[in-house]
Length: 133
Length: 293
Image (cartoon, rainbow over all chains, first blue to last red):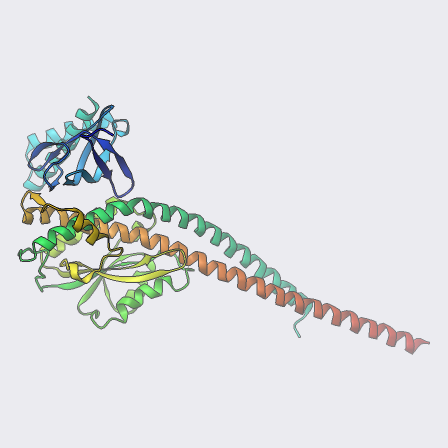
């Protein structure tokens, strides 16, 4: 085992999504995108929809991470994901049409609640699409 | 003594009932395995969520937050998780008793969020009002259900319609032991719940540096507590589903055994009746022959 790896666990209520030794993990939080190496300061952050990039010693893996929170310890990171998908679980045409619809709704400007929901939908669609690219 | 035909009819009826109970037992065994597997898989998620929330709350006892202090307005709400179908022994009535026999909950100050028809009917009989009925959730529990219920309840809580949220369900300890459990969800009170496996303390020792939060504690609470509650509700749904099938499996096993006993008894009666009939016939023939000769 290399010196600079730490253990990463991605768990959802339904399954253990990923478990392994990684060099770096990147994801989007409510405060902006962050990348975590080993020996990060202990921290809990809230996930914003985005791409989850896992850098293993052998290569990179991507997934779309939509909601949840992350507990970062020095040598252990736990992603508590409410919703997370591997690229092959994503339906691209559906994500594209959902993104299109969300854009239209934002352009039409309904009341505030609708706008929030449309923005979330758009973020999710963008996360799905950019995971596949 | 009942006639031979009556006994025979009775026996065949018990036999077909036994076939049904046997089949039901097999079905619930399979369902139990599946529910157990699911509960197993989701366990690490719940433990992690629970640990995180505990560590936040341990550091933020002084925080004034609507989720931590009750507004005191409105009714208490109990999420009651039971089954849609009966024939599961005392499974449903044990959960219902948690509420109806508890002096803290009266029909005047409590309403019920029913998941499971049996619980809904039982509470209606006792005069409780139903906040909402979402019985379909127990058939195929999904995490989305937990999220939906949480959203609905938190809105009602914030608007002052309800002041406390409780959760009543059956905790699936293992295949033979199911514990009816009553749990307070909101306002969050960590002291009320002792950790189930003492994992929390172990975790605390492992974290040598204090945990930071981004965004700040209060904001983090806003976002994490709904997730905490939905995961508890989902966990309760899964646990209840496993317990339901476990209870039904046991009830049906008992029923099958009772049926076997009954069949044995009836076979004995039947044979005795047959013997009696043969004896009577023989006596009649002999008597007849005697009369002729």
